[in-house]
Length: 483
Image (cartoon, rainbow, N blue to C red; front, side):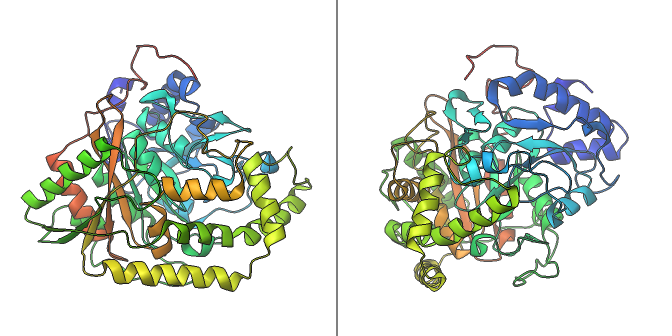
């Protein structure tokens, strides 16, 4: 197989070739390394390509048999591998835990071959850190790939691997999916276990999943990573059938709530609104019933939740610093995160306040949208921002309050569903006049990823995106300016 052929396939397609004996897992890993060597110096997405990548373990079976995979440098872990969380505080740290997530990945045939960049501690919607630098968007190197799974998104968009690990605590899968032209699902709370040591990350707001090219890869990944494990805080309703089987089932008629107005301080870019309206028209043509939905929460309530978690953030950092035998200061934390730590130490919010704020938002939003089968919203209010925008944890001028308010506005359609626990997917359904990707978000009922799979399949068939890729991509000989 040549690189140009490798780039044509999604993960499901590559796995079928491996299972048929037409290519081997080692050959695919070597092609991933070739793609990495060609484009990674320009996008800075992969911070470590394993020296032993050609020999990593993986079952010779499964939905993703032999497919190269990449791990985000925070969240789910591999025993013995570096996991620095994008921070100098954790530089050189190696996890001693094999997460259930990566056990499932290997059992499905995935070969994890390296680590991708993230913002420091996963705290920003952009991916730029003091430790690893700036990750560029393959569609425009002057713009952000999004965060905090920006390295994963840039790597998949640029063709290094067809699928990669991501995690989402406020939009960190869906934001980079929107800005890099990918499929990015944040599953229901409890669908994918965080075990054995992180089953209820951020009170259930953060979940691990993948960024990928196609809806069928998303469905297969749900089959691979879904399922409860001992110690999980609760077990949600299990699917009636495999998610890949949903790809062949009818969608039925749905009642769709559409968000045409802003849910935060940032106005909707006209091009994003046009993308939303075009998708709404497609859903109406499919026979679904649409009704406008008003903002179901106040942006200030989401900001309050993030600030209420500050004392927990501070105490957790202190535990980590002791374990690393390092001080918490400007040599180990970026400016905004250091201010966040100091704010948390001074504030000492009662955890009961955080629990109550989460409860109220879940109830308020649940009541407001319960009549709809799905919601249709923008993923982001605008296209990818330029690097070194004011919204970044390396910014020395921002206060914690300003940063969190900016976060709430930028993530106005994403973070709320981390709180409610509902599944939501960003689909690459449009592009701006300048060619930048625009994602549209579909939100499902709690525990109902099956409907999202079917609706996403319908939209992919009508607005196929498989041939739409950035200029900065493996196999493309044209040169773009570096970061």
